[in-house]
Amino acid sequence: MKKSFFNPSGYFFLLLIGLAALVFPVSLAAQENQVQKAGIFAEEYPMLSDSDLYCSPLIWDQNLPELKIIGSEREEERAMMTDSDTFYINKGREEGLEIGQMFLAIDIGQPLLKLGFLAQKKGRVRVIRLEDHVSVGKVEKGCGDIRVGNYLIPFEEKGNVIGKDTGYDNNLKPGESLEGQVIYLDTDFNIVGSGQWALINAGEEQGMRTGQQLTVFRQKNASLPREAIGNVVVVDVQKKTATVKILSCRETVEKGDIVQVK
Image 1 (tube, rainbow, N blue to C red):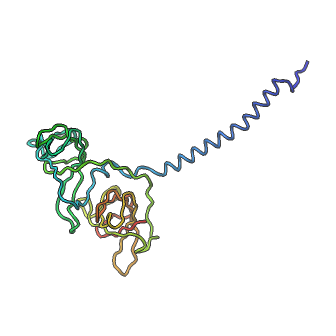
Image 2 (image 1 turned 90 degrees about the vertical axis):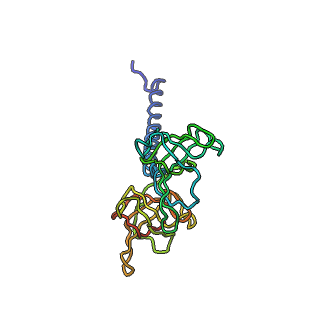
Image 3 (image 1 turned 135 degrees about the vertical axis):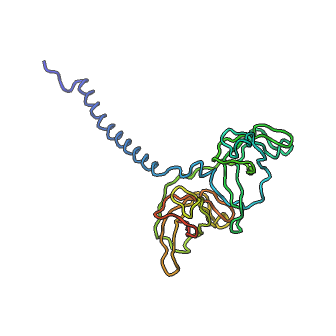
């Protein structure tokens, strides 16, 4: 005897087919949507490294810090301190220092263009022992050359910049947005390229802020149009200056090049 197609088991089979037809397209669509979202997310990334945030140059435009490294445990063996080395600070318990406090070591050098003193961040340090008027610190994460004589300022953890390199072109017109000029290159040479740092003469007072991207222009002389040669991102901002990182360039960046906010 033949089994009827329209029996309970047949209905159940048809129901399964119908559900599969409905569910699988939705699942595939959901998967495609997730892939698209992942692709969009992948276009943006952290643009700054720890070195950019805590080892880059800046213009120090304030009074000299009170805290200073006055000696190190192994200074007779070597001048530079590395991670886990201990050193001595010129203030202690009576001046308000506490065990566990974190500081940023900076080297403050010569004046630059009457804007302040050229300075270099040297890395993070921590107070590990206290005396009345002196304390002991330890290098937590140095940039290679923390030395006796470096100053200490309170450590502030900085947020990263999430984005992508927006590139450079000649669409910006002179005077259309905030402009500045490259005044210092963090190199022993007269040029810098992608991944290196420079200082510009525009800062907080002019409206500059961390994370902004600027196009770098070069103009050989006043009779010729300027040409876009690179793109930079603002790493740190002071009153009248800012530290930038070169993200991309078709020619090396030089002192005197113009930078303009997109």
